[in-house]
Length: 112
Length: 117
Image (cartoon, rainbow over all chains, first blue to last red; front, side, top):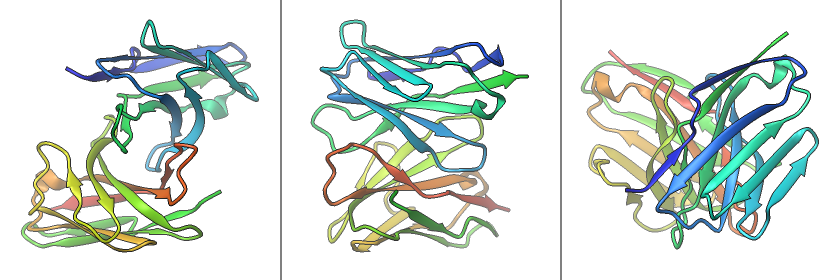
């Protein structure tokens, strides 16, 4: 069956450390993968998109990698801050379908 | 960035009544809008894809007669939850796709929290 899994339901790390979140998918061949941030009671906000021919993409303190062999994407936040605390969702478009489906999400908490 | 507005942001209704939720793209035209449902501490589950001027495409397991979707213009899609029951209580979120969708990015509304008593 097709699945998108984010391995950690919750992640709690110390401020200043690097947070690494994992997204694994099975039985998909996405052309790209996206990461979103969602705060409680709000809609998701787009962060980064990485295409299948890209290994890595960066935006300020964020870095995303995409390994189509492992069917995995890693999302890193360096120099984490309490304001980075939120739920982070990975998402992909199933090959040939014009829709976006989401992983289960990881609740990240950055403690001061 | 592109702005998507959802209304109402929260609604409480009695069991058996119908509730309409609006999703508007404020500064762009959206040929396609997606409707998601999110239960507490769970991820977004795609309910249906709404295309302007045509019938919505529903995901497996989503009752099209219960969740009526209308996408009558390039800036407005509506979701009507008919004969709502307590198990329909959830956070409903729409997202809109610009006509020229070359970034893959989705623009989300702020969500509508439905509570059915």
